[in-house]
Image (cartoon, rainbow, N blue to C red):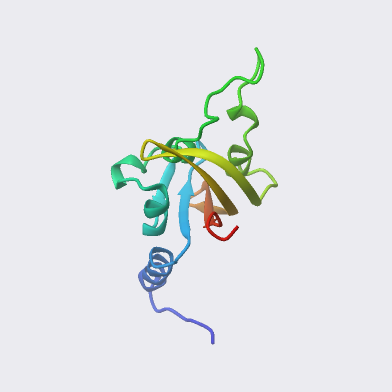
Length: 138
């Protein structure tokens, strides 16, 4: 079946509904790694309020335990972070990660699978990321 729309608003509405009701966490980041959009599954996974998500980085929202830590005098963990590499628009489009995060002031080990896709809207580059929480599936 091929979908055909009379107006762009119809297509936008369908895409928004699909993303919002998708069971996996979905978010969109800009080139500065700031979250611009997220669905309810992402909010539940991160256990965050809407105000704690928009315009913040993924690792800030999830409370990455490695965030900002120094590896050596010249470099920090964040500069070599695989999540940051995924969100930077590099050739990396899929990532499996087991890492500790501080969620609601408690440390949790999460097993997350990321699928990232490049998106261009109004000439700006974004990353659309789908997160599958495989923590309980292990």
